[in-house]
Amino acid sequence: MKLFVAPRAPNPRRVLMFLVEKGVNGLDLVNVDLNAGEHKTEAFRAKSPLARIPALELDDGRVLTETRAICTYLEGRHPEPNLMGVDATERAFIEMADRRIEWYFLLPVGNCVRHTHPGLAALEQPQFPEFGRSQGEKLLETATWLDAELQRQPWVAGQRFTIADITAFCALEFARLMRFNAGEQGLAALQAWRDRVAQRPSARV
Ligand SMILES: N[C@@H](CCC(=O)N[C@@H](CS)C(=O)NCC(=O)O)C(=O)O
Image 1 (tube, helix red, strand yellow):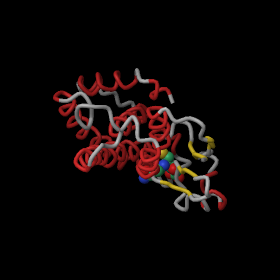
Image 2 (cartoon, helix red, strand yellow):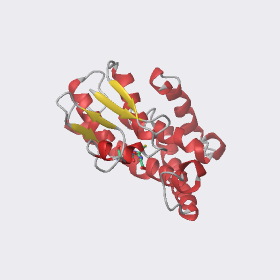
Image 3 (cartoon, protein in one colour):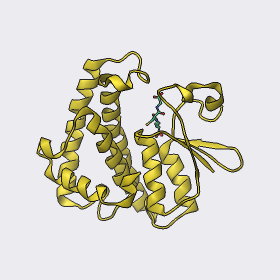
Image 4 (cartoon, protein in one colour):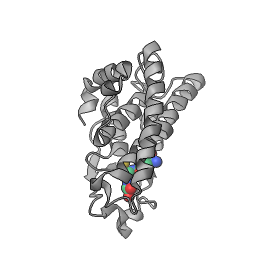
């Protein structure tokens, strides 16, 4: 199988972390140069029609995109350690946590960085810096909520490490580009959780 990724891009990083947590090796990693627009070529769009990564090309040639869908596939093929829930109830609660993080944390970080950072100008045209800054404020709202969650439970979805921690960690790391630092915002529980996740081998991808 081939996994299309790019250094520093948060969504491919989610899949790479997921693979390390699963202990899965042997995928063929293909770097896509986003700044050069490699993902917008006809050849790449034939794999990922909306020109997005990550994309996982299966051995039969079919291609999966969307990080959660790729992770669902990998979880099915490599059930242990479980990262997405063992029964319907746990799966639903973990999905709820992961989607909250994806929509209300990763998305505002992405929008803020894409619309305010000169390094992202190649990807985001036109950039609307004011919109980007407003997304930074939305991020702080979610971060404050997440900090409260992490004061009463060790991990984003509850009592154990799951895909939701991976999504939140990748979002928080990407937020460094907008100089967001949980500790400096007084979000001590979020910072402590981040520092714990950073110790995991998967955080090094
Ligand atoms: N909803 C998609 C988002 C994928 C996405 O936006 N990926 C970014 C990299 S993190 C990308 O391909 N950007 C290319 C572009 O903006 O042109 C997922 O969950 O995988």
